[in-house]
Length: 161
Image (cartoon, rainbow, N blue to C red; front, side, top):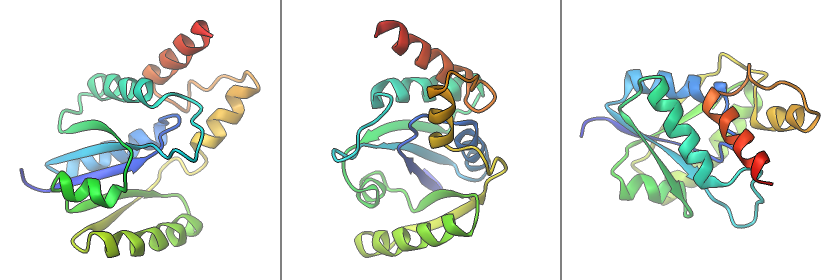
């Protein structure tokens, strides 16, 4: 299958910053997985299944075909092993992100010694899922920060509730 990578995260919600990382990865790796991590100790703002569908729509709309979206309830280092991925993609906005990621990388290397990290510099350093959720909570327009499919997902969920 060539060079295979994973891009894990909660993606709660998936932002244009995440999409930027996906675009970069799609140009470098033969195939990669967006892995929506589900942590039973953390409450999601948006359901993982709907998030996965919104990301799949975003991939189609952006003509990114060498990527698959999966939901995973285990350790991402184990996902990488099971799906034969040798690389983990992470986006960095600043040195705090780097320090955090290096600590996580050390743990993941204990679980899967073959897993290599690839860091991409974020173009949209102010964009984060937390920022998007906060702006949305104050009824501000978030369309500049998330893909159209995510806006549609949020609208559907709000209309259901």
